[in-house]
Image (cartoon, rainbow over all chains, first blue to last red; front, side):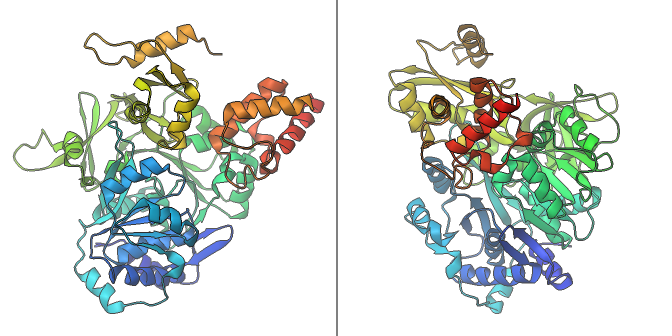
Length: 495
Length: 79
């Protein structure tokens, strides 16, 4: 039984040492190369920090970043990938929660990395020498157990504080074994990777490729802006499998570039992270009628995916696509319509945040006789007449924009923190894909906008800011987002 | 030259932190992300009464204001 994800790396390095593992336009690591570099980085880290320490990987999405992540794992530690596009203030909150023992970055980010933490030593990956301390690595591996953490990924938190979802090795092993089998991934699979490494969709690309000695082509982010360029890349790189957020697939579909037969190598199109519009899927099916299409559902807290649906019939553009059935070794309960999950896939909780953890990781009410956790997703669903799960929406104020999970509360906290703002209230206009932020106070819109740029990632920035005399409240005195939306639409009719 | 003025106004509405007037690596240097690009295309279509779609653009069309203006003019001629 696999206890540590590195067993897959070691098998791939034996089986296909010279085959490409992870590559990008001007960088490539083979399986043997990745194995060697990860061991070197692991030896360096292990000599400096104890096992099970948090290691922050502050790097761009490139092959070396995977080596740094796996290096942390060789040292018996766990990793958190972050990239330099995150605003300073949010990064600082993440640092306060994670308190990393070590930061690994690229040489050109040394200065920015040093500013992140006064306590944690920072090292440039280029400076880590090519030495492997086999005895030390062996010792770390001998004491490893599969409930040790593999990674902590941060998601938006409604109180303004990002939450670090902790995932153990056993959850990723469970997920990847399921995915390789049920998604019928072949040995040597070639992924075209879209998800940033700080987003858990990337776990499927990274580890399924490793499990099958396949490869991952890291598509430059800018290419997603230009569908024609993107298609040319998929053809040139002979990509056979995509696991993308629906908004990335929609952008390609809507551009009209998907002529039939255009992507002869592409055999599998998988999606997860937000609702997949059937119209998008039908446009893809018109271009690639024989590909395998699978819709998946799952929050970061249950290790990427907990339900799945292989598209086995035709859907009209206006239909909703099922999220289907639980993955093997995963149980789904609908409690008052809310999706609750139990199984090995469950996160061990939010890192360094016992209260936030206790709110959503709770005792299974159907098994009061012994401790067993379920995770309450906050997502609502029902069964259709075929027994398939259908996603209905959120029970709270979490939204999805281009696959990013956003708590409106986090945006409101950031607005409330700006001098001169008395009170803020946000809503999401799904039809126009706009976040609207209203506030009372003296600050002018431009000052507020500039202040928010330093605290919110770009995908969380309100598209429209409105200064108001007053904000509507519900009978119980809470801010009323729905009423705000109605009032704004009355006052500012939009096209 | 009035077109350039209109264009710069449209662009500064979308993001007033970027120096659209002189920057020549808007895409390459990562100044523009997908949200910006979608907004820029929508705004250009409205401001210049043209119909640019994502299916007929390349990165080179958006690296500078000059390049965007060339794209606008090309679409106007086609209309």
